[in-house]
Amino acid sequence: MAIRRGALDAPRDAPADGAGGAVSADDVVGADGTNSRVDMLAVGQLFLDVVFGGLAGSPRPGEETWTGDFGWGPGGIANMAIVSARLGATTAISAVVGDDPLSGLCAGLLEREGINTSGLHTVAGWALPVTASLGFDGDRALVTGGTPAPGKLGEILDPDAHPRVAVVHVDDTTHDVVRPLVDRGTKVFADLGWDASGAWDTTVLDGLDGCYAFVPNDREAMAFTRTDTPEQALDSLAERVPLSVVTLGARGVLALDAETGERVHIEPVPVHAVDVTGAGDVFVGALAVASLTDWTLRERVDFAALAAAITVSRPGGAASAPTRAGLVRWLDEHPSGAADVRFAFVRDAVP
Image 1 (cartoon, helix red, strand yellow):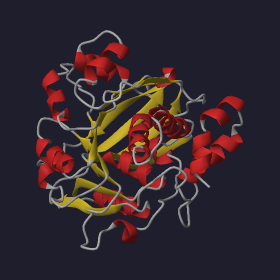
Image 2 (cartoon, helix red, strand yellow):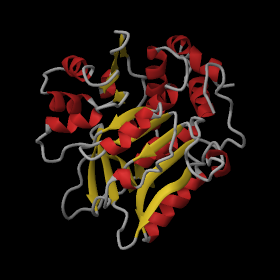
Image 3 (tube, rainbow, N blue to C red):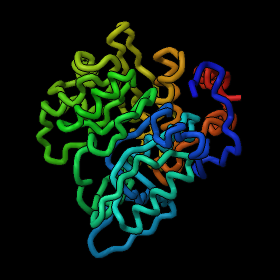
């Protein structure tokens, strides 16, 4: 399914926001039973996310804290897959799962979203990691229990996969994943995780070789590029990928198309942030879907910013990502002359 201007048709039996996917698994699987004929493929580490939002502050030892802002569901690379499916792109996922109950639970939820899960590979004796997200002071802290997925991503990726776009958790082992996809014409959006060691080894950026886009936040971008400002980091990253994007949180988004020289600074969508967990993942997934259109750079980044802003205005992290119809519904519920002009292209694209 190619998505073009004016062609973001409402999915059949479209669910309420956060309650399921846009297409059935039968629509996503190719004639040969593989995930080779999808719009978007997500490749990387899968987690089960448990999200606690709306906390007044960091929990203190010896105390118990309650919050009504709670959600759970598949996390990590699944966040990009879920938002992609909800925004109308046929979507598949490649990741490692275990033989534990949580792995089965996540796989079932992904299938309910309409995501092709034939690329999930089971490793006996390994259990899916669980991440607890604690949201307070306008940000979130993460605690993950478990061990990273065994093996390399190249070992689980269908060699015949031919998606139009892909989001890949890249590192120094993923060249065998990225290069074949690029050679088959796929636009690869690179995802790099937070470096808990604080070293920010610049050789990690070698994993961007061949990728179309890289979308870090400002702290990650400056740390990896050894620069002092997001603008400097953006220019440095533009030497590595055709599309560099640096998210600034409440200050908006910077984007630079190295091939055309077009540069934009997108203002943030004004919302009351309830839970910022997964906002970056939703942004990347929505931007990947937008790359299937003929929209301008500003429109593509605006589309992703709108999807991410709606997500953070609700509890539950990336599990609260909107559907296509939900984008327009949110705009209707938050009328603004400036927003009506800014997001007119979204209304044109979503009946």
